[in-house]
Amino acid sequence: MSEFQHSHTSDDFGHFFKGWIRNPLAIGACAPSSKSLAKLMAKDVGVGARVVELGAGTGSFTAALLAKGLAPGNLHLVERDPQFVKILQRRFPRCHVVAADALELDAHFGENAGFDFVISGLPLLCFSPDKRYRLLQQALQLLKPHGRLHQFTYAGRCPVDKDLRALLRVDSALIGIAPLNLPPAFVYRLTPRLPA
Image (cartoon, helix red, strand yellow):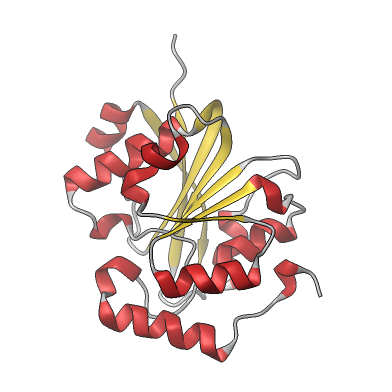
């Protein structure tokens, strides 16, 4: 069985739920993301892409990315929860698992790391405005000039408001909706504005 075919075990779900009980704002949901949401988050990711996944959790989005044919060696999984880190290392041994806080991306990747996609599984609206800006600024610096950042939200609007998009110099577009996710989720794509 290939890495991305592993389903969530009840043990993985238990760790996820315990993490949510410990710190619901950090986890952002009481259950792992659905396959429909994961497929939306992986939309347009090509076989040869280089990808950073933020807040990889137990690997819902990871599995969808690998199912697209992405090489495990091109996928970097950022996760700060030690239990989730162990799960990711077990499920996806050929991916790069980075045990770190997503607010410290610069320390682990440096600037302009040349990634094609940043896939964010973080509950962005649970971050303070300052932390939200810091996180997005660092995540966008990881991208190539035509790179894309995918962000999901449970709110019906883009989690990066107009003023923050102007400050970060990014545009947003709705990729799609996963109505059967618990709760229903919306996926947005953020793309840096290129210099005129």
